[in-house]
Image 1 (cartoon, rainbow, N blue to C red):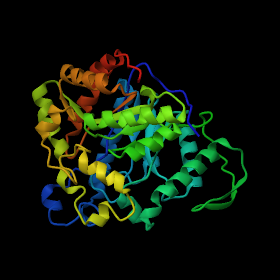
Image 2: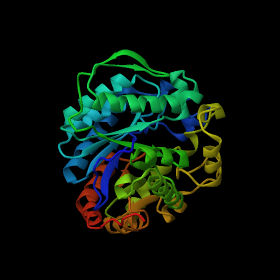
Image 3: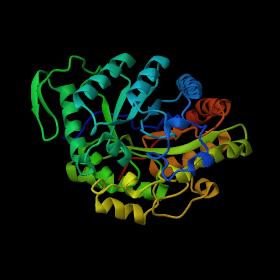
Image 4: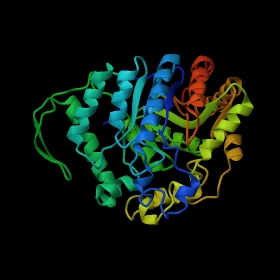
Length: 398
């Protein structure tokens, strides 16, 4: 079923995003272990330090809402020092109560490893909490999330698709009804809470470089969010979306495509460049570990692996298959954007001219960036950069 929900098209919507990193971990801590996730001990986590960080990240959410961001995007990861959000719906609930205007993009829930009925109910609750501001992103999860769940990696995508269809049915079909699927079986399905949005919240699907993810999103009409691939790769993926949409019977536009970039704004270019170096924090350690942690047999198709080998994917400082990428090189190709409001506006204008994305996600802090620097960045983005970007009319897709 192709999604025909109405979405904005005139200018790019700008979203704030933070991984909520536990910035007290450093290179010296990580290099002692052979894995940056499943093998890195949680004894390095200090709840008192985390409590301070959580409250700072919540203050950043409030400011983003106040200064004019269109939305806030949030996510989840497990066994990860660089993302202190193992439960994205909890974070979305906090955002719903801290903010008044922004859309809340959950990107996303790992629906292949949990209970899809409970997921449908939780997101419906959040939509009611927020007054209909939820965008419900669904993700397959990384290989680590699948391994932590104890599930067979070869079943991940099939479980994801069945959960996706069942959640939509919970939102749109009256209950009670029965579900007898391959992986999920329920004698009675009758969720009491339904979403405020009619017929349901929008659904987003993210990816980093696999064309298969793009084809799946386009086939269902779900907007595809590219999470930080280099612009050349992103242009290629966007064209796959456009071509797939034509094949299934609709015309794709900016409302179907989003792009994530790391960005810091400061009062001067020099100050922003200094702050932005923290985007390279522990980059070489995050996927460090045995191959079965990151790519267990059956989790990825052979085609997806071939694409990652042949094209640069995430600009995180290193790549599983590619050569290390420096901070300066990533700036040069606008994968990391740092500078004064004037510089950042110019660089984002270049991105909009090339990609015409309906949604831009600003990955706005990392590692041990100072809270006051991030707050100043949010303030400058909201007051000086976003109004200028809203003036740029998006181009339709051919």
